[in-house]
Amino acid sequence: MLVWIIMALMTGAAVFAVIGPLGRDRPAPEASPEAATDALFYRSQIADIERDAERGLIEPAEAETAKVEAARRLLAAARRGQSDGKPSTAQGRRRLASALALVGVPLLSLGLYLGLGNPNIADQPLRDRAAKSGSELGIDQAVAKIEEHLAANPQDGRGFEVVGPVYMSRGRYDDAQRAFENAIRLLGENGERFEKLGEAQVASAEGVVTAAARQSVEKALSLDPKLVKARFYRALAFEQDGAIDQALAIYGELASEAPLGSPVRIRLNEKIASLGGSPPDQPTGPAADAIASMPAGERQDAIRSMVAGLDARLAANGADVEGWLRLVRSYMVLGEPAKARDALARARASLAGDAPGLGRIEALGRELKIEGS
Image (tube, rainbow, N blue to C red; front, side, top):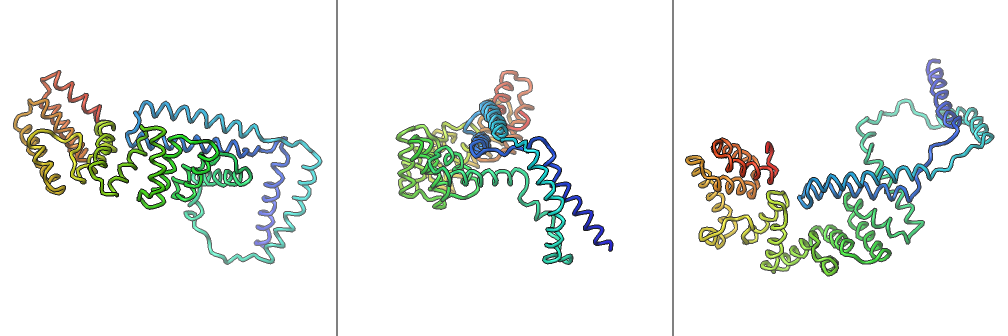
């Protein structure tokens, strides 16, 4: 008997949950496909800005300004989506729906439970039920809505351009490739669209710059020679073809243009060193020339040995401002930010009585974005 009382209470709650919204004057509007497209575009734009800021491709202040503008447009798109809903005020229809809910829900749920119910079925863990929740589920729903919209409107180039980066972020590289191809076909050619297409083609080939990807990259650079990703993939294509000198030249240009101490510059310096080249931040002079002629493994050991020697010299005589500046930069280039931070702290202590020198050290710490600067 207790079971049936509980079932009656649950059925009553379900009925009120159904008829509750029917008593309101206006139902919640559903966002239009166009509004969902705009919202997803601005979300992906914010994610791209954050990724570029992390890679050091844009300055933090510029990144914040761009994110604020994208967020403003995202809110505007959301408001447009809400205004697209068409309220219904048909009181008779709502009363009919309420009556059907009062009678139909209990009968339907009782019939289904008697036919299909199983009180002994195991629980589904909360972790599994929450695996796809929050923003992740929201993006998936937006993508599904855009895909449905594009199926009905295959000439919407903007929709393809918006959904392409989302496919990339989810590892759907073939879908991204098709989306960028459609965007180019429908919206016209420009460097960024061909760059994104080339990136999708390289990702789909697991990092190999195929002939098709090379063609896309070259087309992108013919339209905009300053594109960073396209230049990187051109260098990677040269490297994979065995044209190391040409690859090194492009890697060196990209490293020189990246902010000093940024992760992208450090990675490019490591790439250049692994190919037998001289990173832009590497010391010059006769010793550097001798190091450049060594095999890659020995070269890295020699560079670290030189840096360790400089560190030991400064520990004995800390009045050398240029030496401290060189040491901090060297540790950042070697990808050892903890040692760079330690060297910066020791430089501050050693140059406490040298105001101009201390000012240069502090400026370097800020430039390299070392923690505590």
